[in-house]
Image (cartoon, rainbow, N blue to C red):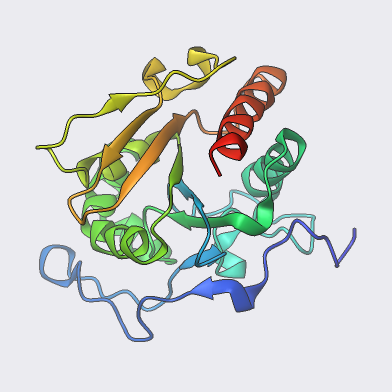
Length: 229
């Protein structure tokens, strides 16, 4: 293991939106958040990647560095998804220093999941991400990314923040494989209610994908972005 793995994020690049406790879930779920997974990366980056939440690992990681966001306090830092996806980005030609990575659900605690244990995974995520949408809105407002890539179900809370009065403009990008997009929805340009306009790419979650097709699709997106900027 390389403890100086250049793909691994720096804790100093985290972007906390609050240093205090979070009371958003207190009234409905009698839960006060105290540990958080804040966004991490280039706060002035042109690209924002939004994942789901800090999944509690089923077993302890053998990798002493990529131990998962529950342990590191940073998004996409487990082996199965975080390291894998960051490698995909690098191979596809993305400039990792221009990327800001965050999660839809900020809370780093198993208690809230236990409170909602009666719900299956997607309904539970939708309830929590709706509560956390305030933070995603703030991150989009502050980073002002020109491009947003969502992973798996993270597309739902992001699209909820779009201005419903603004028409989505479908993008025509060379060599895009629509099968690699969640629900096969074409990438589009949309405007958020907070006024930020971004191109949005709703990709499948990287943990279970055809690696060759997925990376080729990322290459097409990277080439498109590089031409624009």
